[in-house]
Figure 1: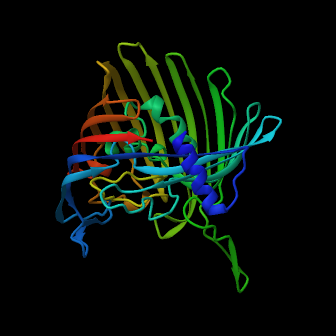
Figure 2: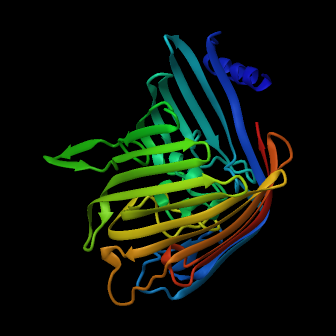
Length: 397
């Protein structure tokens, strides 16, 4: 009640108007602890002005330099990204509601905004909702794969950094699409369907320019859709995503490349243990690329003609006292390299990640956690390894 009143007061301060039939809630998560995070291997690595490792293209035919990026100390946003947000609704009558979510991510260690220093980088949506027909949202939000897959496919859900399945399946790695229109049905006996379209998946819409009779398009249009079933002990999900990169990497130069990703997941709760299984394939590009020790080998939302990655996840969740233990194995197999990087000197191996974690509630809103995760052949580089070990505290409000 107190946080609802505080949020309403904040909104009144911003807008100068408050309506009795409008509900506004302030909410958030704060996550921090201590830990150790390391990325090491060889590659076209250099140091920037701050002394951080900057990785060149992991698929370069020559990788002469060794590198190591090690961080020991405060960790932030491991189980869940730290955030604060405002969400609300207004009753329009006849079962219709106006709804909105404004969610801002931040780093607990520095207080800096996350998601590229965006004010509401985690989510910024406005929409209409009805109990009988579903919900229509406009704005920046996660794609369907990131909404429907994590809770089914992976015991670590959408959190725990490199331990979650998004490290192997980039379309499910909390991929946020800008400029999105999304529709989701109500839950029908456990079934729910969603579909969304982005007019530019990353940054502002630039539209179409015509100079001297020559038309130029640069927007990366994207499609996301999926179906899930969650009822009783059973969970299942099927998703599909694609985006078009008009400046994608071809065998010779650049041009239009359409990246695609599909995935399927299944879970069953036996009460003493919950089983998670999933798999998928990504073609012709990478979606939201996982970073390791806050460094990334490859850019997100990049078309890479000829790429084919097969992804697999298997995991278990088991109650232990008041808490639960989580364990998973995941693999990303570079079945086909991008056309531009094939040839003499190219070398790759299957990326595999092994993770073990534990969470224990201290109250309804506060818990402690521990995580250990090891990844080898990171982004398919034969000698790249990433290690994450930490203990943390998470509070929800």
